[in-house]
Amino acid sequence: MSDPVLDTPRELEHVEARPGERALALLRRRDFRQLYLAVAASELGDSLHYIALMWFVLDAGGPLGVVAVRLADSVPALVFGLHGGLAADRWSRKRLMVGADVVRAAVLVPVAIAGLAGSLPLWALVAASFVLEAATSYFAPAYGAAIPALVDRENVQQANALVAATTQALSIGGWALAAGLLTFMPVSVFFAVNAASFVASALLIGRIRHARARAAHRAPPRLHEGLVALRPRPLLAAAVAALGVAVTITAGSWIGGVPTLVRDTLHHGAGGFSIVMVGYAAGSVVSGVLLARLPIRRKARASLLAWSMYLPGYGLIALAHSLWLAVAGAFFAATGQSSAVVLLNAAAQEEVPEGILGRVVGVVSLTHRGAHATGLLLVSPLFAFVAARWVFGASAVAVPLVGLAALAGALALTRRRAA
Image 1 (spheres, one colour):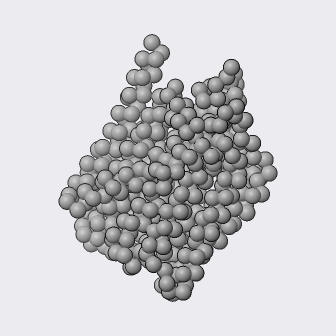
Image 2 (cartoon, helix red, strand yellow):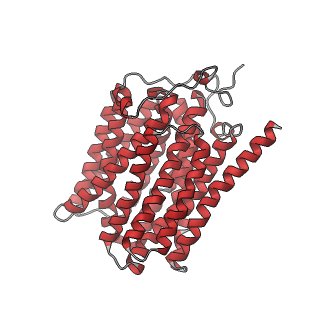
């Protein structure tokens, strides 16, 4: 009897590797095009929302308000991430994505109304951020598990890379647009725009016609099976573990350190920070474009090696005496992280059987998004006691070592099992 947790995906059995399609050619597939446009719409709304949110919170609550909101939009991933993956295997993935978008839109409507009326308290934004991230914890696993059904497993790298490049490009445009519009438009308008973007996303996903039905289970799926499915896949498990540790270091140092470095060391204001953010987004775009065109065979292994890009990335930031060196460092750092995340998700979508895929993607999503919370709690406070350059220098060495150590451990375990 086959084991839906441990078996090789049926569509990969006794089949030679087929060449994947070009990334843009995937948009000819109607259902994937609908999902792609949905993610693009919500990402543009998110980019406008992010700038408005940070501006409003900093004005209303200062640095502690920013920390409170960042924790609120990180902690739910730790609480709901595994259950989001379970839901993606138990119920309709299409309905989960639509439901998550509806919840996110519904949360933002009263926030926008209260803001326009001049009575939006900080605690309401903290609560709204928590609910938004909780809904995303259900959207992300359903989305990740749906991709192979819409593009076929041999095309998942191109699909993920295309979406990553597009969303980062839209982020650049959204940040620039928000910076211009905020000079004469109330910030609450951006919350309303983001609500509308989630409505548009729900409508687009609702038009998907051919979504693979959830796998039939003789017994209800269990949370721990997502972790069990990683045991016979040492490289994939190592890539997930490295993701958690690396993002804890990189997110914590970025959130806590880049604004400090830009202001205190490089002597630039918010405009300088925005330029560094654009450099980071540009690195993610370049990574997405390259991965959309260059298929990688050993994706989990390449994901672990990609963290080595933080050596020049954070190394340049640590040594930067000009804003442009910091921008270059941000570019290399983003190239590494974006490549690692795209390749890890593609590896899971290729290797994991359909019946357990939602739970494994849920583990990946929990690890990725939850590590922002652990980074904020464990790494960001270091900047109150240690110079930013030293933290970035240490991170430039530590992050590549995390990837290389995980790779060495996974290869050793693979050889031991083979022997």
